[in-house]
Each structure stands twice: as structure tokens, then as C-alpha cells.
Image 1 (cartoon, rainbow, N blue to C red):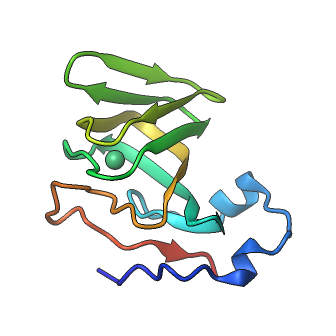
Image 2: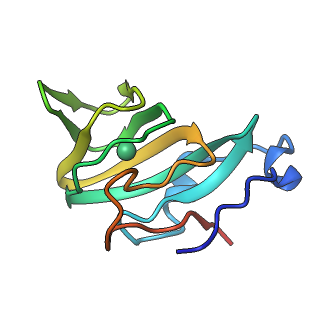
Image 3: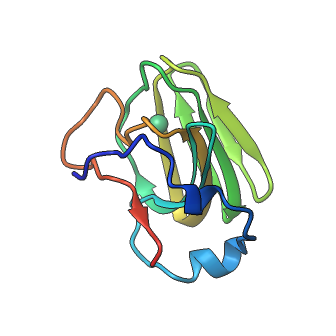
Length: 133
Ligand code: NI
């Protein structure tokens, strides 16, 4: 896994517009977040997901999920939240969660740059944050 660079890339902070659907069209990998913008120590990441992820929590980071395309189920230990297009959920730090999608869903994540995808769980699903070239 690549090391997260906590020093903001000022090119990513510059005010250039990003077209979400165009950005999603530039990669096919699933469960591999791509950085599209950063600000104030936070990342805006895009990720395509399908199937089940691993149960995990983030010790220090709240994590926002916004569904751009498809449907995403976020399982929590005490309930399940289903998100459709245009809907978002913030999972607070320390709360265990597992994202699940029956079919491929396109998700925008907004979270601190320090956030590791698998959080406390680690393991083989852990990946660094990629950049769209
Ligand atoms: Ni998470």
C-alpha cells in the first residue's frame, strides 16, 4: 500500500472543475478509491464498488458516502441504511460499518486524508488512494 501524503497537493486544491461522471469513466477498478480533490486535510475520493466489503471502523475519521450512481447498502451493527442516487450518509468515527452493493455503484467519499479504506480491520482489501492520470 502506498504511503498517504498528508501534505496537500496544491494542484488538487486549485479551482478547476471536476465532472464526476467523466471522472468515473476514467477507471474500472472496484474498491480502489481515486483522489479527485483535496481541501483542508480532507479528500474527495471516487470509488466503484460491487459486492461486500469488510466490516471495519475508523478510529479518528468520520466518513461520508454519497451515491452518484446505483444503490449502496451500508450495514451498521444495529441497522442497515440503503442509499439511492443523490443520497448520503456520514458514518461517525468509531462506528463499525460494511458497505455492500448488489450491482456496481459509484460512490463519492469525503473524509480526512488520513482515512484508510479498511480502517481498523486492515488485511488484503487495504489499498492506497490512487490518482486519475
Ligand atoms: Ni469505512
